[in-house]
Length: 263
Image (cartoon, rainbow, N blue to C red):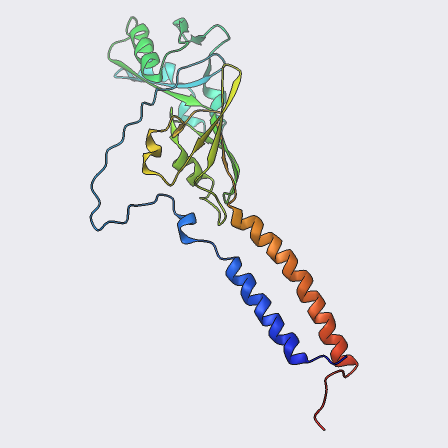
Protein backbone atom coordinates (compact mmCIF):
# COMPACT_ATOMS: atom_id res chain seq x y z
CA UNK A 1 0.00 0.00 0.00
CA UNK A 2 1.37 3.34 -1.02
CA UNK A 3 0.95 6.31 1.29
CA UNK A 4 1.62 9.86 0.24
CA UNK A 5 3.15 12.03 2.96
CA UNK A 6 1.86 15.23 1.34
CA UNK A 7 -1.72 13.95 1.68
CA UNK A 8 -1.15 13.36 5.38
CA UNK A 9 0.09 16.90 5.87
CA UNK A 10 -2.86 18.31 3.91
CA UNK A 11 -5.23 16.30 6.07
CA UNK A 12 -3.53 17.62 9.19
CA UNK A 13 -3.91 21.24 8.07
CA UNK A 14 -7.56 20.69 7.11
CA UNK A 15 -8.45 19.20 10.49
CA UNK A 16 -6.65 22.00 12.33
CA UNK A 17 -8.51 24.65 10.31
CA UNK A 18 -11.90 23.03 10.98
CA UNK A 19 -11.13 22.84 14.70
CA UNK A 20 -10.13 26.50 14.90
CA UNK A 21 -13.31 27.60 13.14
CA UNK A 22 -15.45 25.40 15.37
CA UNK A 23 -13.80 26.74 18.53
CA UNK A 24 -14.56 30.39 17.79
CA UNK A 25 -16.87 32.12 20.26
CA UNK A 26 -19.48 34.58 18.95
CA UNK A 27 -18.67 38.13 20.02
CA UNK A 28 -22.24 38.72 21.21
CA UNK A 29 -21.86 35.96 23.79
CA UNK A 30 -19.20 38.00 25.58
CA UNK A 31 -21.12 41.28 25.88
CA UNK A 32 -22.39 42.32 29.29
CA UNK A 33 -25.31 44.33 27.95
CA UNK A 34 -26.65 44.09 24.41
CA UNK A 35 -27.57 47.40 22.79
CA UNK A 36 -30.19 47.89 20.11
CA UNK A 37 -28.84 48.16 16.56
CA UNK A 38 -29.97 51.72 15.91
CA UNK A 39 -28.06 54.90 15.20
CA UNK A 40 -29.57 56.88 18.07
CA UNK A 41 -30.14 55.34 21.49
CA UNK A 42 -32.85 56.94 23.59
CA UNK A 43 -32.36 57.32 27.31
CA UNK A 44 -34.21 54.55 29.12
CA UNK A 45 -35.29 54.69 32.75
CA UNK A 46 -35.70 51.58 34.87
CA UNK A 47 -36.90 51.21 38.43
CA UNK A 48 -35.97 48.58 40.97
CA UNK A 49 -38.34 48.03 43.87
CA UNK A 50 -35.47 47.14 46.16
CA UNK A 51 -36.37 46.84 49.82
CA UNK A 52 -33.61 47.72 52.23
CA UNK A 53 -32.27 44.81 54.23
CA UNK A 54 -33.77 44.51 57.68
CA UNK A 55 -31.75 43.75 60.78
CA UNK A 56 -32.14 40.17 61.95
CA UNK A 57 -31.01 38.18 64.99
CA UNK A 58 -27.28 37.32 64.91
CA UNK A 59 -26.47 40.28 62.66
CA UNK A 60 -23.41 42.33 63.62
CA UNK A 61 -23.64 46.11 63.54
CA UNK A 62 -20.86 48.69 63.52
CA UNK A 63 -22.14 51.77 65.37
CA UNK A 64 -20.19 55.02 65.30
CA UNK A 65 -21.19 57.91 67.57
CA UNK A 66 -20.56 61.55 66.65
CA UNK A 67 -20.96 64.28 69.26
CA UNK A 68 -19.95 67.90 69.75
CA UNK A 69 -18.75 66.83 73.19
CA UNK A 70 -15.39 65.18 72.52
CA UNK A 71 -15.32 63.44 75.90
CA UNK A 72 -18.71 61.86 75.30
CA UNK A 73 -17.68 60.74 71.84
CA UNK A 74 -14.52 59.15 73.25
CA UNK A 75 -16.59 57.15 75.73
CA UNK A 76 -18.84 55.67 73.06
CA UNK A 77 -16.15 55.33 70.41
CA UNK A 78 -13.40 53.96 72.63
CA UNK A 79 -11.13 51.65 70.68
CA UNK A 80 -12.46 52.54 67.22
CA UNK A 81 -9.56 54.82 66.34
CA UNK A 82 -6.93 52.15 66.90
CA UNK A 83 -8.50 49.04 65.47
CA UNK A 84 -5.94 48.72 62.68
CA UNK A 85 -6.38 45.38 60.95
CA UNK A 86 -8.59 43.92 63.67
CA UNK A 87 -11.61 41.99 62.42
CA UNK A 88 -14.51 44.54 62.40
CA UNK A 89 -16.75 41.90 64.01
CA UNK A 90 -14.66 42.23 67.18
CA UNK A 91 -15.68 45.89 67.58
CA UNK A 92 -19.31 45.48 66.51
CA UNK A 93 -22.55 44.96 68.39
CA UNK A 94 -24.24 41.60 67.99
CA UNK A 95 -28.02 41.34 67.75
CA UNK A 96 -29.17 38.54 70.02
CA UNK A 97 -31.72 35.87 69.19
CA UNK A 98 -34.53 38.09 70.48
CA UNK A 99 -33.60 41.03 68.24
CA UNK A 100 -31.92 43.21 70.89
CA UNK A 101 -28.45 44.73 70.97
CA UNK A 102 -26.80 45.75 74.21
CA UNK A 103 -25.49 49.32 73.98
CA UNK A 104 -23.26 50.98 76.62
CA UNK A 105 -25.05 53.16 79.21
CA UNK A 106 -28.39 52.68 77.45
CA UNK A 107 -28.94 48.98 77.77
CA UNK A 108 -30.88 46.84 75.36
CA UNK A 109 -32.33 48.36 72.20
CA UNK A 110 -34.80 46.40 70.08
CA UNK A 111 -33.68 46.58 66.44
CA UNK A 112 -35.20 43.45 64.92
CA UNK A 113 -36.68 44.03 61.43
CA UNK A 114 -35.47 47.64 61.35
CA UNK A 115 -33.51 49.03 58.43
CA UNK A 116 -30.14 50.64 59.10
CA UNK A 117 -31.71 54.09 58.84
CA UNK A 118 -34.50 53.18 61.26
CA UNK A 119 -32.02 51.68 63.73
CA UNK A 120 -29.84 54.76 63.43
CA UNK A 121 -32.77 57.07 64.27
CA UNK A 122 -33.82 54.89 67.20
CA UNK A 123 -30.33 54.84 68.72
CA UNK A 124 -30.03 58.62 68.28
CA UNK A 125 -33.30 59.12 70.15
CA UNK A 126 -32.04 56.97 73.02
CA UNK A 127 -28.68 58.78 73.19
CA UNK A 128 -30.24 62.24 73.06
CA UNK A 129 -31.70 61.55 76.49
CA UNK A 130 -28.18 61.76 77.88
CA UNK A 131 -26.24 63.80 75.33
CA UNK A 132 -26.94 66.74 73.06
CA UNK A 133 -26.42 66.99 69.32
CA UNK A 134 -25.58 63.34 68.82
CA UNK A 135 -25.56 61.65 65.43
CA UNK A 136 -25.10 57.97 64.73
CA UNK A 137 -23.80 55.92 61.82
CA UNK A 138 -24.85 52.28 61.60
CA UNK A 139 -23.41 49.71 59.19
CA UNK A 140 -23.64 45.97 58.77
CA UNK A 141 -20.49 44.02 59.56
CA UNK A 142 -19.52 40.68 58.05
CA UNK A 143 -22.04 40.63 55.22
CA UNK A 144 -20.81 38.45 52.40
CA UNK A 145 -21.81 37.08 49.03
CA UNK A 146 -20.30 34.16 47.16
CA UNK A 147 -19.48 34.23 43.44
CA UNK A 148 -18.93 30.87 41.73
CA UNK A 149 -18.41 29.55 38.22
CA UNK A 150 -16.93 31.33 35.21
CA UNK A 151 -15.31 34.30 36.93
CA UNK A 152 -11.63 35.09 37.31
CA UNK A 153 -11.54 34.94 41.11
CA UNK A 154 -14.40 32.82 42.48
CA UNK A 155 -14.89 32.99 46.22
CA UNK A 156 -16.62 34.69 49.13
CA UNK A 157 -16.54 38.49 49.33
CA UNK A 158 -17.41 40.76 52.24
CA UNK A 159 -19.25 44.06 51.81
CA UNK A 160 -20.31 46.66 54.36
CA UNK A 161 -23.22 48.46 52.70
CA UNK A 162 -26.79 47.29 52.98
CA UNK A 163 -26.82 46.19 49.34
CA UNK A 164 -24.57 45.26 46.43
CA UNK A 165 -25.55 44.83 42.78
CA UNK A 166 -24.84 41.68 40.79
CA UNK A 167 -22.43 43.63 38.55
CA UNK A 168 -20.52 44.88 41.59
CA UNK A 169 -20.30 41.32 42.91
CA UNK A 170 -18.91 40.04 39.60
CA UNK A 171 -16.45 42.94 39.62
CA UNK A 172 -15.19 41.89 43.05
CA UNK A 173 -14.60 38.42 41.59
CA UNK A 174 -12.37 39.83 38.85
CA UNK A 175 -15.01 39.95 36.12
CA UNK A 176 -16.51 37.28 33.91
CA UNK A 177 -14.11 34.69 32.50
CA UNK A 178 -13.86 33.97 28.76
CA UNK A 179 -16.57 31.29 28.79
CA UNK A 180 -19.04 32.95 31.16
CA UNK A 181 -22.69 32.65 30.13
CA UNK A 182 -24.30 35.99 30.95
CA UNK A 183 -27.72 35.04 29.62
CA UNK A 184 -28.48 32.54 32.39
CA UNK A 185 -26.97 33.70 35.68
CA UNK A 186 -28.32 31.92 38.75
CA UNK A 187 -28.74 33.34 42.24
CA UNK A 188 -29.31 31.13 45.27
CA UNK A 189 -31.04 32.97 48.11
CA UNK A 190 -32.04 31.78 51.57
CA UNK A 191 -34.92 33.50 53.35
CA UNK A 192 -36.34 32.11 56.59
CA UNK A 193 -34.62 28.75 56.00
CA UNK A 194 -36.13 28.45 52.51
CA UNK A 195 -33.76 28.21 49.52
CA UNK A 196 -34.87 29.73 46.22
CA UNK A 197 -33.13 29.72 42.83
CA UNK A 198 -33.49 32.79 40.61
CA UNK A 199 -32.32 33.29 37.03
CA UNK A 200 -31.18 36.53 35.38
CA UNK A 201 -30.10 37.58 31.91
CA UNK A 202 -27.34 40.13 32.45
CA UNK A 203 -27.29 41.03 28.75
CA UNK A 204 -30.71 42.70 29.04
CA UNK A 205 -30.92 46.30 30.18
CA UNK A 206 -34.10 45.53 32.07
CA UNK A 207 -32.13 43.31 34.45
CA UNK A 208 -31.87 46.30 36.80
CA UNK A 209 -35.53 45.73 37.64
CA UNK A 210 -34.98 42.09 38.61
CA UNK A 211 -35.60 40.97 42.19
CA UNK A 212 -32.04 39.69 42.46
CA UNK A 213 -30.29 42.61 40.75
CA UNK A 214 -29.36 43.76 44.24
CA UNK A 215 -27.90 40.88 46.21
CA UNK A 216 -28.57 40.20 49.86
CA UNK A 217 -26.03 38.96 52.40
CA UNK A 218 -25.28 35.23 52.00
CA UNK A 219 -26.56 35.17 48.40
CA UNK A 220 -24.67 32.87 46.03
CA UNK A 221 -24.34 34.02 42.41
CA UNK A 222 -23.32 31.40 39.83
CA UNK A 223 -21.99 32.11 36.33
CA UNK A 224 -22.35 29.02 34.16
CA UNK A 225 -20.15 28.34 31.10
CA UNK A 226 -21.42 28.81 27.56
CA UNK A 227 -21.84 25.73 25.37
CA UNK A 228 -18.75 26.65 23.35
CA UNK A 229 -16.58 25.66 26.31
CA UNK A 230 -17.79 22.07 26.26
CA UNK A 231 -17.68 21.96 22.46
CA UNK A 232 -14.14 23.25 22.45
CA UNK A 233 -13.03 20.75 25.09
CA UNK A 234 -14.53 17.88 23.10
CA UNK A 235 -13.00 19.19 19.88
CA UNK A 236 -9.63 19.55 21.56
CA UNK A 237 -9.73 15.97 22.85
CA UNK A 238 -10.80 14.59 19.47
CA UNK A 239 -8.19 16.65 17.64
CA UNK A 240 -5.49 15.43 20.01
CA UNK A 241 -6.36 11.82 19.17
CA UNK A 242 -6.39 12.48 15.42
CA UNK A 243 -3.12 14.41 15.54
CA UNK A 244 -1.48 11.64 17.52
CA UNK A 245 -2.60 9.11 14.91
CA UNK A 246 -1.38 11.28 12.03
CA UNK A 247 1.96 11.82 13.75
CA UNK A 248 2.37 8.08 14.24
CA UNK A 249 1.55 7.41 10.59
CA UNK A 250 3.97 10.12 9.46
CA UNK A 251 6.74 8.59 11.57
CA UNK A 252 6.05 5.13 10.17
CA UNK A 253 6.06 6.49 6.63
CA UNK A 254 9.38 8.21 7.22
CA UNK A 255 10.95 5.29 9.08
CA UNK A 256 10.04 2.63 6.51
CA UNK A 257 10.48 4.88 3.47
CA UNK A 258 6.94 4.29 2.22
CA UNK A 259 6.90 7.40 0.02
CA UNK A 260 6.84 6.35 -3.61
CA UNK A 261 9.64 7.63 -5.84
CA UNK A 262 9.37 8.56 -9.52
CA UNK A 263 11.30 6.19 -11.80
